[in-house]
Amino acid sequence: MALSQLTQWFSLAVLAVVIRFASFRYVYGVQKFNGPLLASFTDFWRFLHAYRDTLFPSRHLHEEYGDVVRVGPNALCFRDPQAIRDIFGGGKNWEKSGLYAPSAPVSRGEWAHTLFSSPDQTWHRNVRRAMNPFFSQTTVNTYEPLVESTIEPFLAELENRFANKDGDEGRMDVFTWMTYFTFDVMSDLTYSERHGFIARGEDVYGIIGWVEKFLAYGFWAGQMPWIDRLFRHNPFLMWLERRGWYAGNTFPGARFALQRLAEREQEEATSGNDTKKREDLLDKFRKAKKERPEHITTTEVLGLSLSTIIAGSEPSAVSLTSIFYYVLRTPGCYDKLQDELFTRLPNPASSECPQTSFTIARSLPYLHACIQEAFRLHPPFAINFERLVPQGGATICNHYIPGGTIVSVNPWVTQRDKATFGDDVDDFRPERWMTQDEEKVRAMERAMFLFGAGSHLCLGRNVALIEIYKLVTSFMRTFKMTMVDPEKEWRINTWAVSRQKGFEVRIEKWNLEK
Ligand code: HEM
Image (cartoon, rainbow, N blue to C red):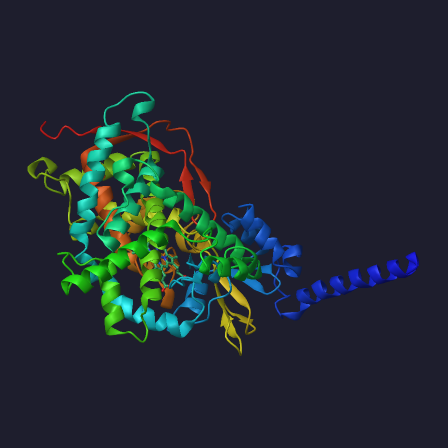
């Protein structure tokens, strides 16, 4: 073939690619919205930013392009908190976009879909219906003693390792230890067995590191979901895994869960029933399997047990860390909170353990305001939560959006909306939640999106609140905290979860006898 002919074919191929990409820009009917130019041609733009962790926290996009930003050829994100109601609220059950499926764990070469990852709405509705009773406020209140039983050894371990120590020995990295706490709470609630993070003071079996990578992967692969078929859900690798020739994609926690599951089944088969006194989440999931075998099978039991560890541990640790960080860094706040915890609650010296019931802790106004404000400023998930507009289109924040468009809301954006929270949105000011203006408080609550909304609202929200209110109260009534370096800001990495690094404190046991 002559060189000139080759050049012609090559030029034609380039032209075809250019036309294809250009068509993406105009074909979806969302071209009236502004955004980065490359994003209007290809999802590679958001994939790249997610991968390089440069989209955090997406606010700058709205500052540059306005209330609605085109973040992909067919993807829009919204700034106005009204979008939460228009997309997620009022019985709407819009399908999830492709963002979520890459987050499904793999177990022995099979997809182990979780409530979070599954694209199947009917499956989600049925499983969620079976799970809701186990996570209602009334049921979750019965888990309180279980949370307490992890708080006790946690405080004891911290006292032993860090309390009243100088130099490097006394430096406690807050996020690391809050992670050990929340992972142990969740494994205890799920399996009546702690993984042992607190006792060993390390990432047992590398589970925490694995979850971090696992969530990060789901986040960046979810921006261009076909990419997932090359990696985690690669059909060939999964086929190898089913034959036992490869195990790279299986979550270490899945092996742990499968072992616990096998033990329970064997126990039941030999003794006729379960010999354990306490009913944990795994027992409840197994009970649901017996009661609703048409919806809950062993696969669901496994997926649900993994969900509680994967979805439930890190975000609570992030929130606990941000509460302590902001309370310590905001002038006057630490003393005010400390004062409330010591004057409004009985003297901790009067009982063996300084734990307070969730109901009482929740009723303390300043504590509640501090927690709400930390939730607002630092939502654990820094994700654009996406849904697909149903066929026929819909109106979102007064804009008509065609069916099939990916639309999203990010808690880091709505929770810093100036029209709702005021010009001081970037300040930690718990008092904003203590106003007598009930309408204002309701408007602020409507803009809070850290737990999601609608049919996928966080299943474990009540569990997280119990952990958080109880730990903050117990911790602050046991130890006096000071920052190792009050001038130093934390660093945040946001592959899906906005983890904080470099925030260290010293702790000193309160002398309660004085
Ligand atoms: C501060 C702590 C937590 C935060 C901020 C948080 C946030 C969220 C968010 C934003 C979602 C996704 C909503 C969506 O897909 O639209 C979610 C879902 C979920 N969370 Fe949480 N979560 C927390 C703690 C927990 C805990 C402790 C558990 C377990 C006990 C848990 C279990 C789940 C599950 C199972 C789902 C999937 C629900 C569904 O799609 O139906 N989360 N969470």
